[in-house]
Structure formats: structure tokens, C-alpha cells
Image (cartoon, rainbow, N blue to C red; front, side, top):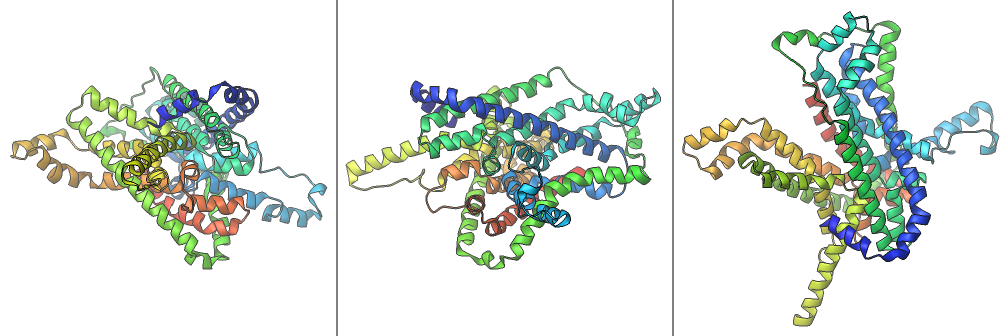
Length: 522
């Protein structure tokens, strides 16, 4: 429905708005978007591949701790990263203040310092919080590869670095493409960071065209362009993995794969520093900045505005988590028991929502819900003399619906992975012991699926709490979540006030990140 609504609104916009967009908006916004995606992809690939290779190939000081810590930047939303980086590197921040004190400069005209509010700053911030997507994908693949191919390359005279570039990375290309696709989708979805840093991307142009210029049709036409971008990304990712299958021949005799060469001295310190650098930039710096500001605003923890936003976030996120887990369970269970083309098609269609940026979803969700509200209100007025108002589009239901559409694939994938770990023979054994299908589901499958269901719900809960792009456009008046509260305070340059809700978002986001880290270690 959201996709159909966006296309319908775009087609009804006429040629005047389309010509304005093609002439004045698209060239600049498209160029900035492509450049941001390309540079962010390159930097995240560098961070993710190198750190994953070091962690899986060698032993060095702090390796075990760093293998877990490298996932932590996933808990930092990109817009929170942007706010903290600007505070840290801006003219009044600690870095430039120390720089002026050290060299005796009096004003900004006396020296040059790179501007964080730029495309380069956006690439740095996006890469520092998104590289774990590539790191996780590469680390899993490097572990599954084993050391057989690498050992053969070493016996043929290849050094460790050349073996990585010529053997391990090409074999991990499908996983790298999956990680990069997630990075570019998250880059496209971002609105808080790019607006704060002054980078005019397609996503921000949709927001600006709709709210600041009052052209919904123009925003929908830009949204269609963004959907084409997403479709091309998915097509490129699948094309890159076409006819590429790498199977590792793992046997019980491969216990030697767990023995890693030890890096001592300068090489060990260099490896540890290389892995610690992205953690320090992407997690420790934002966390310490938020904690230092929050320590000065402890009274805001009991502020009614914060408590109300926290309640709204918990209610919307909880409802989205419950809905997506139930629907994802139905889809995964249908695929397990039926396995036909209809259930498979339903699962694929349900997974399309994650590829839709939040701004696109907002347009596609708001218009159908508003039309329904207006039709129902008109019907009730004409027949009963009552006004129902905006039941769906004027409440938090619109945010709940958009987040459910966007994160359903996350819940369905986690539940389906849980089902994959349960042998089909469990179902058969239960049926032969006299249980029907419903009894098998309730007494056998559901108890075994409880960890997967809880994990799926937790992932969706946290992602909904962090979501800003759709929430900022769909929220009704006087309805704030933690994410929109951070956005409002940061837009008014009140970063210290924004630190409290931002810190809560980061701490909640650490929970699924630690779950992922523990599962990787196991």
C-alpha cells in the first residue's frame, strides 16, 4: 500500500512540479547522494574488511575484547553521532579550543580547520557508525572459510596481506556486497545527520519539498526516484553475487583452524590500534560526549517532557515489536509447514519494507490513512452527526504502522532463522504421538522458539525507538518520541538538553548489539 500510494501521488502531481524537480532539485541532490553513498561505502569497506581480517586471522593484545567492541557503534544512530561530532570538532568544541590555546590563535580567521558540517564530515560520521554491517558479514565469512585456502596460498609463497587481497576478500565478496547494501540503504534513509551537517541528499530533499515548500506531489516524485535507487542497489547486490558460490569443506579435522599466528611487538600494537580506532571514533567519543553533557543536566531525567516522550517511544516500539513478531511468525510458520509458492511470495513481499527509506514510507502511509480518516469522519457526520476526527493519521498509529512495515523483514528473518534450527522431525514425532497441528505448535514449537521470538521483538523494539526519518514526518501535534525530542533540541542548538534522550536511545540500543556480539563469540 505505501508503494502504491507514493506512485499514485507522484503521477497526480502534474508536469509543473516534475519540471521544477528535474531542473532545480534532482541534479544537485542526486550528485550529493551518489557521492555520499560511494565514499561511505569505500570507508566502511576499509574499516570492516581490515578489522574483520585482523580479528579472525591473528592473535594480538586486546583481540578478544576488541572483537566484541567493534560491533558497539551499531548502538549509535547516525543523527546522534552527527550531533556529538559537531560538538566535539566545532569552533567551541574541545579540539579547536585546545588547538587555539596551544598555538595562540585568537579567532577562526587565524587558522584553518576542516569543517565537520560538510560532505566529508558526513562520510566520516556515517562510516564510523555503519561499518559494523561490513565487519559482521566479513567476520562470519572469514570464520567459515577456514584456513585451508590461506595455507595453500602461503605454501606457494604468498604473504598474509597478499593472501587477504587475492584469496580471502574475493571469496568473501558476496558477504561484503550484502554488508555494503545495508550500509547504503541506511545512508539513504538518514535525514537527521544530513540535515544537521548541511548535506542536501535526496532524502532531505523529500523532507524539504513536502514540509518547507508545501508540495506533496513533488515530494512523492522525489520518493519514486529514491525507490528506483533502492531497487538498483538490490539489483546490483544480487548481480554481484550471481554465479558466485564458495563452499568451505569443514570437517572434524579442521580444529587447527582455531590456531592463529601471534603478532608481537610493534605489529601486535599496530593491529590493536587499527581495531581500536573505529571503536573510539564510532562509539566511545559519542558516548563520552553524551555522558559528559548528561551529567550537567541530571534534573532532566525527571522532566515531564522527557517522561512523556519515553512513554510514547515505549508504547509505539512495543506495539511494532509485537505486531511484527506475530506476522513474522505466521509467515515463517506457513513457509515451514506449507512451503508453497504463495507463502514464499508473501515472505518476499513482506521483506520489501526494509528497503524503503523512512521518508518514502511516511508519504505512502500518511495519505491512505488520512483518506480513510476523512471518509469515516464524513460518513459519521452525515449519518450520526458525530465527528470521529483523525483516528489513524492523527495518532501514534501512523508511526506504528510505518515502523511495522519497515522492520517486518527483521522480525521475519530472525524467526525464520529460529525455525531453521528446529528439525522438521520434531513436528512429525509430535504428530505420530497423537498431537494435532495446533497442539504441536503450542506445546512443541512455541516453547523451542521462545529465544528467537524474544530476540526478534527486541531488535524491532530498538530499531523503532531509534527511527527518526518516518517519525519526524508522521508524528501528530504534541506527540514526541525520544528520537524526535533529540532532533528538536539539537535543531535549537540545545545539545546538552538532547543528551539525556540520546543517551537513553544509545543504552537501549546496546542490548541487541551485545546479543549479536555474544552470538558471534560463541
